[in-house]
Image (cartoon, rainbow over all chains, first blue to last red; front, top):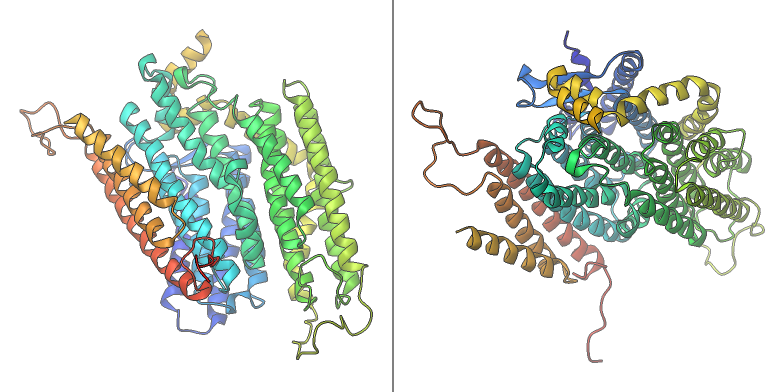
Length: 522
Length: 113
């Protein structure tokens, strides 16, 4: 039986986004209701999908019921179901935060937000390399709008770099896709995997080149080192709920790297086998180091958080770079934690910034924030979770990652870098917290600033604090349900690391046979 | 023929890369346009170069032009067009807000004075 729910996370935001565009001249309250109800519905749908996929096989949805590999196919395995659920959860909370005022700073915020969701969900669901490109473009085009939302010189400048880099990236993506199609004659990912395993040796160089060209694009999306410098400005200067949602955008890059290089360029892929094994680990470790340096060197809480996104990508890809089942399972446990916590930190940084009219999120002494206990507790929770201290989820996820990679050749490097990165994160966040909450200017503010008419410092009620608090509250939940999540992660890693499951689900048992034979023969 | 087409592709990419590496928004946009044209040409070529092949199935034909690259290139053209339109608007806005067409938004000092 076809499970029509699979296309729900694509169709609903498309429908709602269009509806919001049609209501563009209506008050923003209507947009909020439409947007939030759409996010809530997606959350419920992805929750059901996650539950289904946790116990069931890989599900596919052939659009228009065209036979694969000729038609467009959506594939839902455990990993993509989990990514969908994280995205939906994050999107709902970010939108709830944005509905407290960010969405009034410019037009069409809610419509762009829905299209953004559609693009992200599509990238997680698609089983086709060209549709991956299309969904990337939907995601990027809406993200351009969201990055620039609210305007201002800094956002425009950061947005300019972001847009140009990604346009070049899209062209390079098409180049890689074109080479693969030209040589293998298909774009369906499962079919690509089968044909890659049978490709003649004379095409080896071109196929590997295509694989690495695609890696360059995914590395740009995930922000791996030489391609990560757009991120701190773009994420650090944009509005907080957008930056928080974008915490999952780099994870799209991570997801696609995991998907493509464990499927099309898996160990059974003949001439393309193990293409990334030598590249990913060093690139990720250098990224981690660069991210840690950025965290240590930033003088602004928003930018520190942006660099933390790079640290988190480096950590994830370093662990994934070992391409072992256990390590990938550990990375799958770490992924929801790191995505949601960095997103939470973006929101906390914004809450702090709005109560410090002079210094903003900059790490310079200012008058005390309006609600120091509340914000201090939120900041402390986020910092403890991100730095990986017990008793929150960061600690357990990191311990699991370190234990799972300990037998691999790169283990000393991963251990050293992850622990060192954690230490630097801890120091930087500790310093940030003490400057913001303890290094205060007395009384009525700095004498150097002329007495100007200040906006009254906002006092946060429950509705303002709810999104950030809810994101941070997920961390103890991840610990409480740890054994369930670990079990799920191992099951998900099973499906990811062994391409035969995926190919069998998409193309049927006959087509996956050659891959099985070739893997058995080696 | 193949030599000519691949030379075309190479020259267009080279010019595009050169222009994208300029620091002003107008040449950058021209460069992006050139690169996207070249990539569209490349996608079209992945169906191989043929002449006089039918695109509709008929009984007395055994070889056909590959329809998929044509579909791909159509999608790529549409998306590329939208993206270029967006970046044009963005750079106009950057020109207005930052008062310079430098991609880093910094006004370079004039050579004299």
